[in-house]
Image 1 (cartoon, rainbow, N blue to C red):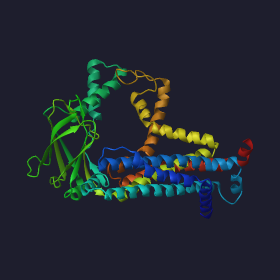
Image 2 (cartoon, rainbow, N blue to C red):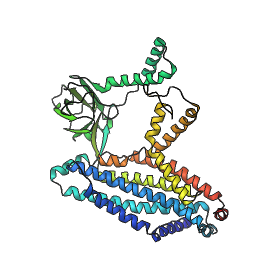
Image 3 (spheres, rainbow, N blue to C red):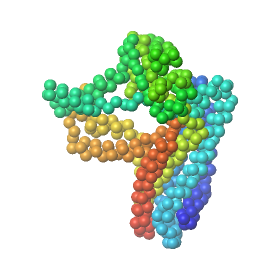
Image 4 (cartoon, rainbow, N blue to C red):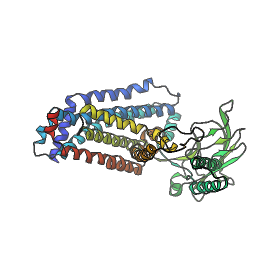
Length: 459
């Protein structure tokens, strides 16, 4: 450990000599201070706070991410290019200790910079909140600066029903093989429509089970978070509906009529103690419009409740951002063990860009081809040899990307959603242990086996 600590400190001193840390710290604090002055909001305390959290944390993450890749690619590659690594390698220090020391040095710098920038954001939020009227402070405490968990109906599994209906239609009409995937999607959408679409003057009921959490939420207000789409746009751009929360035959039934806009999330506060004896909350909605409304099964209706405070939730979100930085530093160091600084930086940025293109990869897998699809069916008429090779690779690549990208602390913090300890542990396991650990093992192995003097002579 003494050798690793010494190498960690040498990495930090090298970054300080380049004044990278000082410049980056100034840029980060400038972003925290200047962004609130130039960002436009909807002139509400909730909207302004959500935008500030989103933009400042996203800017901090982007700046630190790029700086981390730059340091990780440069610190080892340049030492080898300038023949400085040989001075360390000839000492009684293992190659893996050199690699690990540099990685820990970069992580230490990231931790200090991230702590300073995120701490400034947290203090800024608290300071601004205290200067608001008491009514606006209450809104922030209940909807933004809080940790709220969500309860929603479980998603139905249509797989068996879809396959049964598909087989029935194939037998009746001899559907060609090229059209079966398209028909499968049609059947799935038809089944989902029965639970999603609410026709004019029809009622839709949701029953949300709080389970063991019912004691925690009985005496606190709840928030319905709803979103719907429309089949036909109305002149007013809003759509009337009647909400009834609670048992219909109960004296504590809460009812309200609201006109809401489509294609956006709305939060409706409801009074406490509306759960039944089983810990279930019943929500009914009656469509009072001349057009059908569609509430998506995934996020059309959920109930939010307070699970904890903002401070601890903010800390968990910042830790997930730190896990991302640890992964990026391992990626850059692994690339620099066998590539020059420019090529290592190019490769690392390329991997990062591919990670940001997960939507394109998902679309390719959904269409079943990397080439042109049938515009009528939306899927490939026939898979080529290249598709048979590329699609399994893209599926594996998408799973790897989702392991790192599947956590969104910034979105959760800006909407007051809870980041649980379980999510934090899963993020650490997937981002740091599995993906980061694989890159660390790869980087250490390559660096241990590389002939440094020969590499220097070739350069």
